[in-house]
Image 1: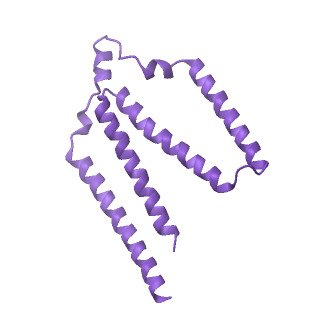
Image 2: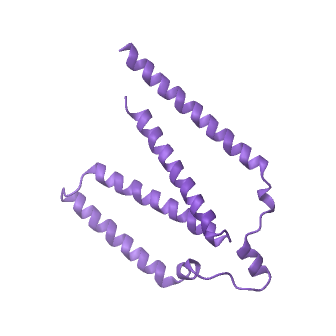
Image 3: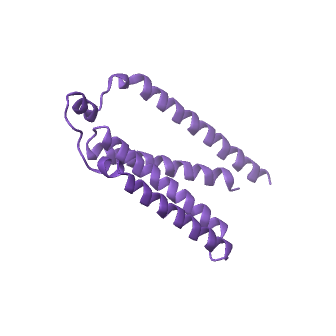
Length: 148
């Protein structure tokens, strides 16, 4: 019994220390860079009278895209609710699907946001990789804290 309590305390202390280290790194990066003077390449092009680079921005700007996405999401959630009510899928599967959906939107959103702000695709892919790594650290932290 004593070993189990000691292991849980060790995991909790490790989690707190890693969280403090993460906050320290974020504060260091925010204070050490001159990010307040950053102007995205797309904003400079718009200010000069040019049109920003098309791509996903033009596709996402259409009303029909948002309408089709909304209909697909409503149908997906409706069929998911019917499958859950019918017993075809269980609670952990639903939770896993929601977590995977949110994680996918986060990773894709970081990439699209960086590309739309004028960053090259390599930097956008690196940002998505960092977001994926943070999600992995979060998942490992949750597993370590909740198991015992």
